[in-house]
Image 1 (cartoon, rainbow, N blue to C red):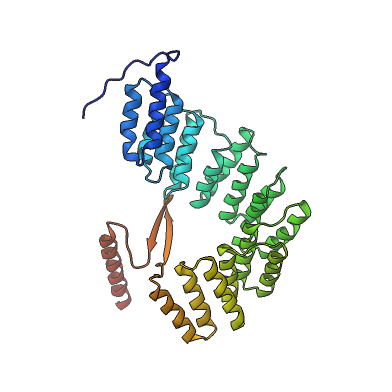
Image 2: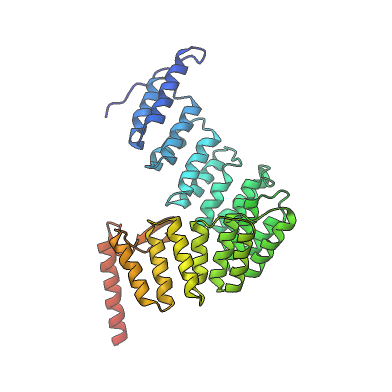
Amino acid sequence: MVRLPVPRTVNSNSKFPSKKKNRCLSLLKLSSSVKHAPQIHAQILVSGLQQDTNLLTELIRFCSLSPSRNFRYAQSLLYNSLDSLPPSWNFLIRGYASGDAPKNAIRVFCRMRKEGVAPNNFTFPFVFKACATCLALEEGKQAHADIFKFGLDCDVYVNNNLIHFYGSCKKVLDACKMFDEMPVRSIVSWNSVITACAQNLWSRDAIRKFVKMKDFGFQPNETTMVIMLSLCAQIGNLGLGKWIHSQLIERGMTLNCQLGTALVDIIHNANVSDGLVDKVRKKLLELEPRRSENFVIIANMYADAGMWETATNVRRTMRDGGLKKIGGESCIVLEGSIYPFFSGCCSKDDHESIKLLLDGLNLHMKMVSSL
């Protein structure tokens, strides 16, 4: 590997650095792959702009948030920088928190604190998001304490994500306490606390918050309605679902795919008339006629209603239209990393060794049971 000589930094008063800097920024904007990051970085060094923290930040953003991310390179740039700005750390934390390794976002945040870089209101939301994803309660609590140190305890954006974090960790009382102590709230604040209650099946508290938000001058939006309808489906309360639906109609909300799917979930868990099934079918296909999940939902609804022939016809229409049912998908969180897996598919190279291990365990269990 040939090492390029690092030139002396060009005088910042010269007209040349701005042109060279603009050229590097243009390369970043035009680049379609993070594979170009080393070449762009080399161009920055050759141009004598290695001390330009704004360029470094843009390069880290490019590596952390572009579709084909390169976290290793972004982290190497950040950790070897002599003078990094908070946005550089924020981009890497955001990238990790939104990806398959949220635990790394927490590690980068700890390194940021160790390096003496002050986090801001764009840092903590993604730290709390990472903690929520991998259920890192203790780390989230420590970050919660940090927001007071940096005077961000009244920031709405930070507090909304903190409510989501506590709700994800099943600490509903802490989420509600956080919400009650907020000096300023937004519609997102209300949706966050209702979600915290709903996803943990604190249905009465969720309904109470839903009713109460109007007293504080906040009107439910589509997100609020989806949360409440999903709760009704989870607890199997058709009556409450009808009332929420009436609220939706009263506010003149247009039925979109998310609201339609939430309504279907309620109907799916209740004995409904064939006419209602037909209405839902027509509306879902009107909203997204090429969405295979809609056909599957409709077919299942007809099957649950005992209309087997109609259900078969729906599946035949789906097949004739070239639509395929999407395989089941799930994931597990292991040591702070998310591992997705799909029905009938294994994306891991070592799946054979895992299968051998399972076969060995199965054989061992049979031997033990035969003793």
